[in-house]
Image (cartoon, rainbow, N blue to C red; front, top):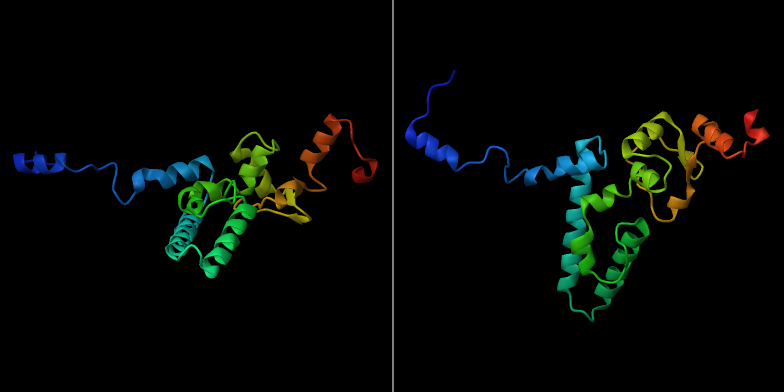
Length: 183
């Protein structure tokens, strides 16, 4: 049992919050990681670093004069790239990059979240398990990494692998069983 604190020690401890540290950002990283099932903390920090770099680039572009050819060219390139990736909802303004590019925006483009949105899985956790077991492919490639980022154009190509039992059960349920795939 520790000793009883003196009066001035208690006063000092009242001013300090042991639960929320400034550098922890109120445990936001933990909340985002749990919501989107980001398994590795390094992934969250990578997304955070990318967001910071993109915001910094957008801020530096906004400091250039509006009629600058370089600014217009790189602004269009940046907005198009982020829109095609699915990070931004529209490619209208550069200020969107500073406000809407977040770790959550990157996490929403991860394969398990996209599968949940496409109703291929009920929860992000179930989708992650299916991906790790090898039931999902994007295009022609089988994907086993839940951190795979799906762009807008690749979203249509997310499907089940050829020999997947889940695909067979879905086809059996819909009465669309292909005899060729049973061989």
